[in-house]
Length: 66
Image (cartoon, rainbow, N blue to C red):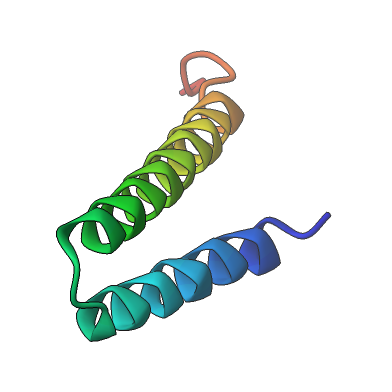
């Protein structure tokens, strides 16, 4: 699966949940949406850490020969 599409999809879901959270009135509903947003943000963070780790590994083939 394309990493860019995954990041866009998770980001879109975060914004959807934030917009929905702004419309709810009860504390229970706000708590539910805040947990959804937290979980999505955590997932995005894990994915970004994985991608950045892969990018760093690609550039570390050893010292540059002179």
